[in-house]
Image (cartoon, rainbow, N blue to C red):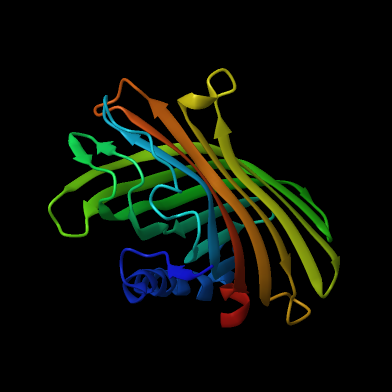
Length: 279
């Protein structure tokens, strides 16, 4: 099982955006003593991604195809995320997340695939790119704020930037579909610190219509184990397991769209409080 870079843009371009965000927020952290900002947590993480499900169909006469048809079922992909959380007093928090996700694979088609108005015949060597970048803002309120246990609840709004491209490797056939739109969700996070040298967190963003699950869904669940490097947990390396997915079945769209995906992540990251670091 191979490792593939899950990126359509260059890694340098994406991480320059993260560094720019950090530079813009650093003055806020430095002035935390003059206002309500109690902490500014910055997280950066990377690791392998596994595609468990990715079913797609584009157009009224479009063929539904899956991860097996385009070679996404075998490799592991390398992916990254970054977030910033501002703690405003004891109870309030604002989280900004940058979650790029882009998978490019090559395969010879084992069946005909009609993508919008373009037919890709069986046996065609193709290159397939699936991009689902997320830009998410969340507000959380701390319902429980004890020394070893915290429980936050809130709401999230994710701006999705989706792009799917299918092209024959000789360049003769090409089709694409793209979309940008908002995705609201509910959010909850439970954090437990059993000792000064270990903390654990369960965090979920999600929204599913219980009366029509095919009408739209988003879920992002993560289980994290962190190890503080000092008594104040200013810097903490962590291991995070994440399950991320969702989709929509919209036969009345322009064009009609079917898209459902499930991804699993095993991530190593580091969390740092910029307020403490700059104090």
